[in-house]
Length: 369
Ligand SMILES: [Fe+2]
Ligand SMILES: [Fe+2]
Image (tube, rainbow, N blue to C red; front, top):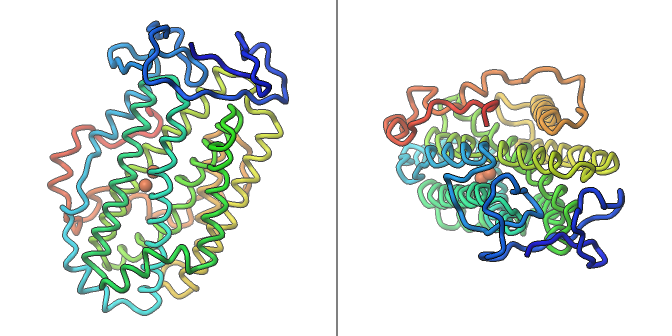
């Protein structure tokens, strides 16, 4: 039977009520199946539940997880169906600064999606709600598709030597390695010590990674695309970003649901730590964005990068019910970006027909997820 264990290894029958304010609970991996588990959805819990581990989609507790699962399936896309021949021609016509930024942004995105594909199962094996397990499995699958899209972009647009250089950039660029290490260390902490509180920390780290770290890179591509450059790559990024919106919703819901079920799991000290994690991530992202672009990309000044990342950080903090860090930033500094980034938003989107075929649902409504 699944039990929560105290850090001393003593089983806790009623973990919530008996927990010490400062004690973290050790989580146990779910078993492949559990004949003693409860089928009753009323007894289901996100963590520490007594799950049979069977996936029964007509016996669901967490409606949001099932809705997100359906939304992600409807968003299915194939990177190779976006033509990149024009991008291959245009790449040589970019300025040196644009090409440098293009390469460096891709190298960072490649690293992060790879990290996510590998790390999501580490979280999933401690989640005791099968409908949420399903969601996280498709989430990991989509991260793999993102890696597939980068492979396709590199094969289509740059020469083999540049492709290898971009793949290996995370080892050669200290700036890149430093910030990758920061987020990886947070993930490793949970892998080494899978307590309920480290899980909350890793959930917030994931939320920051998906909600802030990707966006200076996305922003760079949208700025290029707005000028009619590299539109195939920009379409790939649009599909990736659409997936990221559902991933953010998964982790936001996980965070709130676990707190609802485990009052006191996130202490005021932890909330402060989460806000500090965000502050560090914002500093990294701004420094990275400015380092990559070096103030030489038309339409993306250092000041815009600074304001954009802070604006996003405020949004993400708000959706976790945490205090915002940058009250001076009140609106999106590049308001054109959201509509530009939407799928099918401009006639040069080569993928338009295919998307209509895939996507049965209407536009995602963030508030419904
Ligand atoms: Fe991704
Ligand atoms: Fe993601």
